[in-house]
Length: 155
Image (cartoon, rainbow, N blue to C red; front, side, top):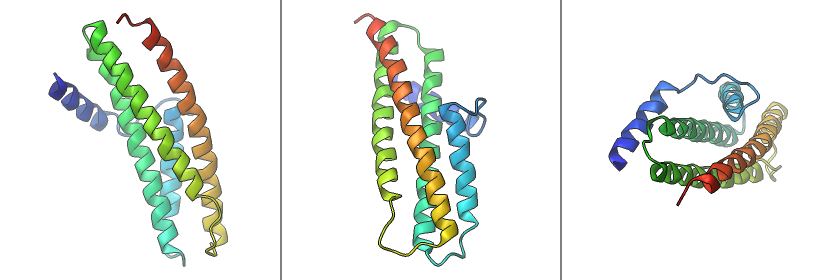
């Protein structure tokens, strides 16, 4: 059963890799972060190449986490009984909780450092910081929405 869920999850990840509808949703933020990553990639000639690389990695990790979350949501289409649904909700809650911790760490790392940072790079850091702050709020909303069904699923 676990293998079947894992295979379904991987398949879903490939099928929904970049198609998300609502711009205001958590997945709309995924697209914004991905677009910002493309802009950051263009700064490869910057003096602070380590910072550029770190920002690029941060963006891609966040995008992959959001893609995985989207795939996990699709699992509900294949569940047959309420016990499986409860376990799936628990997995989603755990994933979002861990993702929230990662986003918090990303925000802390975007704070001004002692290193001099170029003006255009600093601008991208501020944009990412705003996206990550909004993402934190959206994760909280997702978690709130998931805990409601969790309470209604019979034990």
